[in-house]
Image (cartoon, rainbow, N blue to C red; front, top):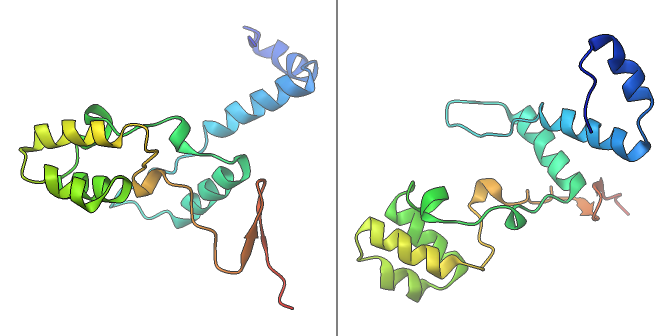
Length: 146
């Protein structure tokens, strides 16, 4: 979809869009406003809650888009974090086997061990449902007390 070059033509263009194209445009515009990055100095729990709800609503599963590699994660975290990832996704024994390696070698071994496991760091995992909620594929609803 290509937006018109002239600003005066934009509204007519948007009004003429088919429903699917209009939803695609809305999704794109929404994506530009979502920032769920959690930096240690940044305290924005409201923004994070909205991002978590949006992720739930669309069924976002980062395992389809991201894998732990030396370049994307393993080369940027401590050896303890690397061992934790391998422990969670593979086994405590596998984590122990690579723990004595130098960090670059440990990261490379961890990349091979984690390949295809679907492991994600906590920040990329789907949010846990809030206690008392019943979750469906589309959204979570507060459970009514009987």
